[in-house]
Image (cartoon, rainbow, N blue to C red):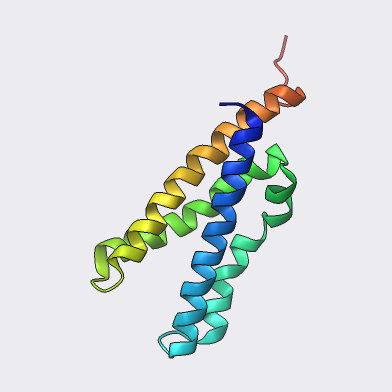
Length: 122
């Protein structure tokens, strides 16, 4: 798979995750299960790498995976605990696992194309 295709897939998956989680947390905030401020704070970390993900910056894809791990913990907890939200948690988990894999591969492949990386000591 080339980096152009991987970039398009990762970007589309990231936008899908952002929309899915925004809808979920804002819906939880509006229903009164969570406060609206708490719900908005859950979305905020996902917005941090947005510019770099849209632009295709491999450095952003590398550190963006760490932010996705926070949401993976949420999805796995929700998958284990929640009865009514099983389908949502399953979709969230599968999407996050695909994004974590895609982000890592894209950062590695695009970094090699651009000649980025750690310099080896002599």
